[in-house]
Structure formats: C-alpha cells, structure tokens
Length: 430
Image (cartoon, rainbow, N blue to C red; front, top):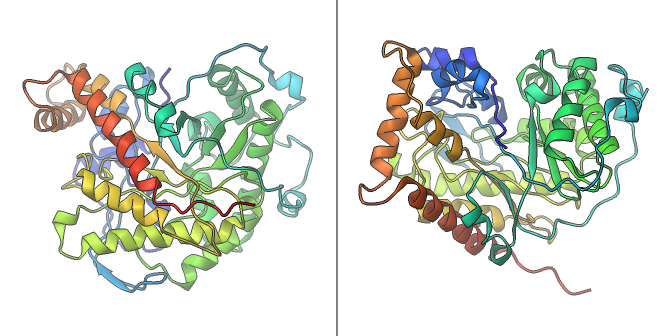
C-alpha cells in the first residue's frame, strides 16, 4: 500500500504560479517543510482523492551564515519533507480506539504540564538494520535488504494525526490514526520503527518562539500522539520526523537553543529522525561541495548531542529537494550522495555516531503521475505532469525499461548507503 502526504496544496499552487516567499527563512530548515513539492504541487490537487503526495516550498535569500562548527558562505535556503509506507504481515487482531479507552483529546488524561515533565524514556537498543526504508522499491529490490542491513519502516503524516490541521491531537485525529495504524501496522507485536511526520500548523508552532506557551502546549500534543501510538503498538519504536529541527543556514546559538527547547519531546522518543536532505547541487556553486558536507555533519552532530544516547537515524533522499527550482527532483550524482551520507556518518559526539539513515523517496508516486496525464492541457496539473515527463525522459535511457531503471537505481541507492554507513566506527566491544 502507498502512503502519501497531502500537505501544503495551496503553497504548491503558489510555487507553480511562480509566487515565492523571498523573505529570509534562517529560522529553520525544517520550517521549510512548507517548501517541498515544486513538481508535485498541481498534481496534488488533481489527485487528492487518489492519495497523491507532495512536499511544500518557499525560497529564501542570500545569507552569510555562522556554521555550527564550520563558518561557511552559501546561496539560499529551502526546507524538507518525508513520505513512506511499510509492509507487514497480519497475524494478530488489531486494537481499536475503544480497546485503548481513548475517547477524546485528553487521551491518557495528563495535563500539558504533566506531559512536559515526564521522566525520560529508557534508552533503547538500535534497530537490527542500518538502512530504514521509507521508499517503495519493488520486491526485486526488497530481496536485497538482508545483504544491505535494510528494513522497511512506517511513517504517518499530518492528515493521519491532525486531519483538520488545527495543531492538536484531538478526537478526530485519534480516530483517524487508530484506523491508519490498524491498516498499515496490523501486527500488534510489530517491533519496528513508526515515525510521526506531523507538519502543518503543529510543526510551525513547535519551532516558533522557543519557550513560549504555544510551543509548550504543542509539544504536549506531540507527546500525546506518541503515547497513543505506543498504546496501540507497545513493542514498536516511536519517533517524530524533523526533531531536532535542522538548519542549512544560521547554524548558530539560536539553532542550538531551539533544539534544547524541544528536549521534553526528545526525551519521549525512542530515536531521533532529523531531516538532512540535499538542497543544493555541488554543480550550482563551487562552494557547495564542502558546504553541503558541513551542513550534513553539523546537523547529525546536533542530533547526537540532543539524543543523549538515543539512536539517531537522519532522513535522506537520493534526489535533490524539490524546493530547488533549478535542480529539484533530479537524482543526485552517486558520488555527491555518498559524500553527504558519509559526512553524517563521520559526525561524532562523545564517541557516539548515527546508527543509520532513513531512506525516503516517492518514485512510485512519480511513476503513477507520469502514467496518468490530466485531460485539461491548460491546467496547472498538466504543466506539472509535463515536468515529470521531462524528468523521466532525461533520466531513463531509451533502451532501458522503466521498471529496470528504477530497480537498478534503487539497488544502487542501497549499495551507496551501505558503503557510506560502513564508515561509521564500530562500537567498542564490552
């Protein structure tokens, strides 16, 4: 089954029309979750009923940044997003909202202050694989998982958690998430990773004004949602996408302070899943090769610092982020992608390193859109389809079938991730 993100449709239409927000967005790369979807924007409107997906997007201006560890000068900033599905066998009866006794927005019965002052969860062991797959590769590629230390995970999105985008995990969200968990994680003994990719109004409230009452009450809603998932799947590991918030620009004291401000949420997660996507092609500027590696390493290092021993799995995507209007959605050259992941793998805090990565992508959705052109050739959706058609025409050799191309591409992604992650030093023997 495919899982898709429908957020930011209006933002996507603005981008398709060439309307961009030119104000500085140094506050947070993760705030740029409202930045993805350049290519899928119009298609998301057209295919909403068919579970179309896309990411969101705005653009920033030229800045001089202070790197967390390495001062660097770069061009402009974007944001990030994620989307995935998981495949699991159903051998046990699924729990329902009634089984859990959850009847409203006060699931668990704890006040926001109580939720923010819970004792930290015990540190859990890392998952048995290093490549956590949130793409939709074919069964041919899945057969290679074992030799690459890979395994599927499950991601739930804003429409599954906060369908009204009100910034709260209320009764409507609880009912929706109950159905989604039962559908996509039917095994009540599931021991893998479940990531809540809750964006929209909630995420903006989470990262705005650190220490504010709004941020604190929003953190409590996130914690409430993680508790709800744990009630349904007690053996699963649970995380939240984009925590701690990543930055490309202004990796300074304010960035660290923002990460510190979400510590109550971090302490209720089994692992951390920051988003470290590639926004700029090395070919765009002579400085980007080193700047991109510094960005990846710095954000991985901050996540390790905030994790305090929890496993860390950054989200990565083998395509340029779609908020890049020139290079977005293109496949990243293998050497560049490996360099980015290797930089994360080399980040170190007190002898601790990342435990792997989440491979996110949505090539299956791109293929679906490619084969279903809209009828109205004057529509934004049709213009969007033409961009995807152009992308595929450039990527896929004329003498290679589409299925073979994506099988080969995904196999190489597995190989390159494995190679990059092998640079992580092995922990000392106890």
